[in-house]
Length: 189
Image (cartoon, rainbow, N blue to C red; front, top):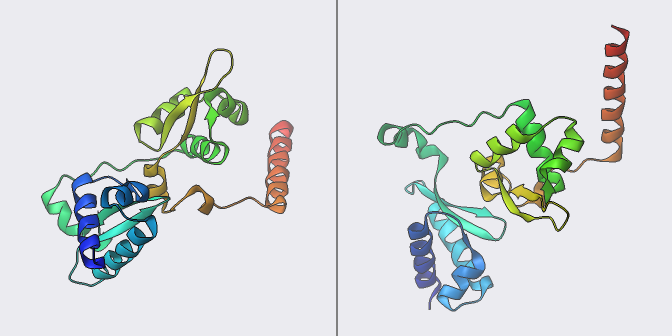
């Protein structure tokens, strides 16, 4: 199979599936190596980079998805209903951050870190498709474990969790000092 034929097959798979497809699944469908599929995807990406194309390829961790270029959004609005924008409150962002960095994590562990009940926040994040149930912890009560989804990666513009910013020791010390100062101020009032 030539690179053009393989790229056409990859394009057909991505178009038909709509959602992201793992590279290994594409390779298996085409009876090719993952490295060959990656070359075909690079071929498609270069083809879609031209101005006369309204689509592109979105890479997410070990999967890819066919998507509309951002520049074409204004035209889509006239055809489709404007998508509902997800608004993340501070509580939701805090909960999502904890889950992203500590996953897999139970709701109780999230609550211990936050210091407040997190039922509503976890339920909203599941509803928004940013987190999902990953299974159950092998412990009394078998609590649910939560982790982030591909929608989380898409929403925050990262290909994998490895691209999330890391916290250095100096920054953590600054946060602790700020928190202690806030506590002092509140106690003095």
